[in-house]
View 1 (tube, rainbow, N blue to C red):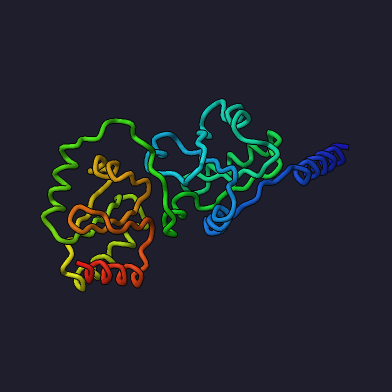
View 2: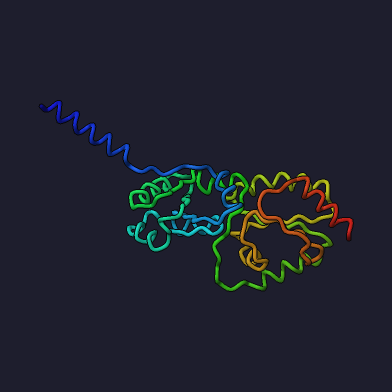
Length: 238
């Protein structure tokens, strides 16, 4: 009799497991393709501290560690529409996906690799807006420095940004070919006032100036050929 009960319990558990709704998994390249053509519900489940290092555009933030995570989600996320979830690398977003599925969300998609893979693939992130005032003394000193140079390439980067690290060797290479440009590398965490003054939201961002007049802006990974052509064009117009 005991064996029969154990078998019945195993069958019940197996049936419940099979009936349990599962969330889907995609990678960041698939998410990027989806976002290129659709505006979807995108949920960032990281902590507020992590959010300061950047998020994917249009993402709503609800910390999965919050005790009221589900109630916050129900007040924000439509259960009848697909919801894409990401975190730092995919662990917490998978947890959040399971919680939302259990709460009755019909179409839940976990982004495996999270924002770490997103940045590593060269996709731009939006930095959290800081409403504090800009220190114009620092900005004016920077503008004065630009005025003293005919042409300047300004690379805004962050030490935690994978795409920024990929851009640097390309810039170093071009700097040896286009010596008529001054090259300035600014860490956004150390120069937030200049970053905000130019209303930049993504890293990496590359600005090209003639004097203090901005001629070009590029966000994300650099394409060497395109940048080479742009530098040629700006240099020849001086």
